[in-house]
Every structure is written in structure tokens, then in C-alpha cells.
Length: 477
Ligand code: ARG
Image 1 (spheres, rainbow, N blue to C red):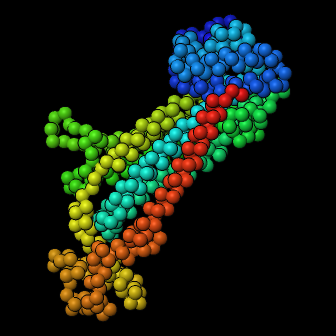
Image 2: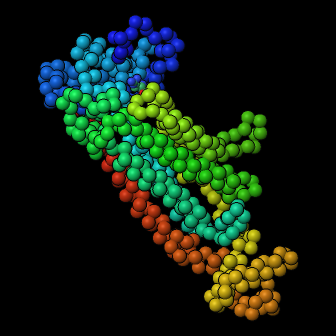
């Protein structure tokens, strides 16, 4: 059903209609469009613009449509341009002429961005909840391996030993920042565009503040031109989702490396692996690879929307219709990847022995020698030099650091006493890294405890937000 046409003498050609049509993808906004129509209806009613009996017939029809859209009984048809026209057709089919009453004081320009905000808020809360599940799996795995030494890397070269639980727990913090970003985004997105009309506001006695509150927004927009043009919330959501994607991708990369024959640290569960159609022995970490691969399209969606927005004149332009598919795709993608990666993490087992044997390799205890000398008041530059000489000597004679003789040690530096060997163990190196955030067992235990506490807070926060949103969607005004 067309929402315009009075001033036209020709109908759109098939090509024009095909390019204009968005209902095939914006139909998912239907529940939010119907809910915001209920809020708009209440304002039209209480301002006296709609008579009580008309308003109550429309309310009844809207509530019926909510149920019918939910059950699939009502859906769009090929001649509907977009979700708004499809739903107005639904109302008109039920009510005749008065089905078109809700257009008073409202334009698709403020309507579409209101719907999109509501949809995005709903979905971002679900994504936050899925992130907390992933964090839970990471904390559990990190706890399981909180006593397992492993090599820590910089430049993908052995650097210093770490506890493997420390390595796993680092990811929890990246996702905690994503949750913070979602939280901030929710606050900033909590502005209702309704009342802005096409761009200039409305001459009708609407109550945008009231509509805003009834839809769960903190306030209504302060500038109607900005309100119908603003897609910052879309771009920001796409950035957050890209960042989540990058975090998932980096996990994916680690899992790929750790499960190679060369590393042999990670044993990915069969349920999270796939085989090869030609090589019977193959077991591939496809979930990890897809997590890595999907991040590309998330970043692409962000780049696409920013490019579409750049240089766009104010207020509404049809280009803005291009905000939806990238947002929907990124939301769908992240909701697809998160549970798969969560399951992959929860079911992967690691080879403690292999990791422990590898921990001291590559002279990863050399920093211990430098730190030992610093404790004996040797300036760090000198200490570093001496430790480097120890490594060079070991390398040329194919030995480990603790195998240097007393004499060799003291000839490298007078302060290198035999008791330096006490720090030349993985256990000693780990135990000494007690700074906040460090790899010592005590420091890691504290990190895991704090992370668990933050996770529980986040779970409560997003579960409350989800319930609040569901209550708003279920209410009728
Ligand atoms: N389908 C449109 C969109 O997604 C709705 C708004 C159209 N508004 C207009 N004045 N043509 O952006």
C-alpha cells in the first residue's frame, strides 16, 4: 500500500518500486513500529485529536496486529513498500479509512528512526547478555588452568612464562570494555525522535516527552532536524559490534595457532570442529576460523554506513534506508558467532604438560637475571646487558640459563651469585610477578575474583534492562 500518491500522475515503474522497496528487510521492525504506534495513538487521543471510540478501535486493531505479526498470520505482501506501509495496510484492512489516522503528527522520517532505535536497543541488550555468557566460559576455563605454566609471547616469540589461566583471562577484560561501550551506547541512544515529524516538528499538540517515556526512552529529541538525520547510534553500534568481532577474531586466531600440530596445546572438542572432504585425518577449528573471518564483514558494515552518512545533506534522505541491512547483518552475525565461540571455549582442553615444558624454552627466564641484578642495585641497563650475555653464552654452548657455572656467572657480572639459580625456574618467575594484573597465582586469583564480580554485576544490569524492555514492549500505551 502506498503512503503517498495524491500529487502524482504516474505510478512508479517496476524498476523504481524494486529499488525503493525495503519491506523485505525492514519487516523485522514491525513489532517496534506497532509499539511506537500505540504510544503515538495515546498522545493523539489524550490531546483530543482522536475521539475516544476511534482511538480504542485503533488500539484494538494495533494489539491484534501485534499478535498476528508475532504468529506470522499477518505479514507483508509484494506491493508493500516498507514496514510502515505494510502495517498501515493491515490497520486499514481492519478499520477502513480510520486506519490512516496515525499518520497525523508523524512522518516515516521520525517513525523509522524510532523503530530502528528500539530494535537496536533490544538487540544490543541480547548481545550484551551473550557476551556475559562468553565471559563466564572464559573465567571458568581460566580458573581450570590457573595453575598451568605456559610460555607467554611477544612478537609471537617466547617472552616470559605466564600462567595459562592468565592468558585466557585477558579476553574477559576486552569483552568487559565492550559491555561498557554497550552501556554507554544505551544511554546515548535513549532519545526518542517522535514528535520531530518530517523534520520541523509538529503543529499538532503532541507530547513528545510523554511518548518518549512510554517507549522507555530517557527523553525526547532536542532538535527535530538532528533527530531525523541522526544515525550516530547505528554507526556506533556497528563500531561496538566490529570491536566485539575483532575480539572474537583474536580468540579465533589463538585457537587456530594453539591447535596446530606444531603447538599441540589445544584439543578442540569434536562438536566444535569439522572434517575435510578429502583428508580423512583432518580436524579443523572452523569455529575459530569463522570467528576470525566474520570480523571482516562487521568492519565492512561499519565502513559502509560511515561512507553512506558522510556528506549527506540534512534532514532525511533516502540514502538513510541503507542504514538497516548493515546493522541487521552485524547484529545477526555477532549473535551467531558468540554462542559458537562460547561453546568452543567451554569444551576445549589444553595439554598442561606440553605448555609447561615449553614455558622456559627460548630463554624466557632471562628477565629474571636482570631483575635479580636490579635487586642487587645494579643499574638496569647493565643488568640487561649481563642477562643478554648469559643468553649468548647459553646459546653458543647449547645450555639453559641455570646450567651456567658459578664462574661463568661471576665473570659476566660480579653480582651474579650462585643463588641467582633460585629465580631461574618457571615456578619462581611466575610466583614473583605479584603486581596487580600480573601472572603470579595470587595476582591471578584476585583478577579472576574481580572479573567474576564484574560479570555478575553486568549479568544483573543487562537482565534488568532486558526485562524492562520486554515490559515496555508488552504494554499498550
Ligand atoms: N523505508 C524508509 C527508510 O528505511 C522509511 C522512510 C521513508 N521516508 C520517506 N520520506 N521516503 O528509511
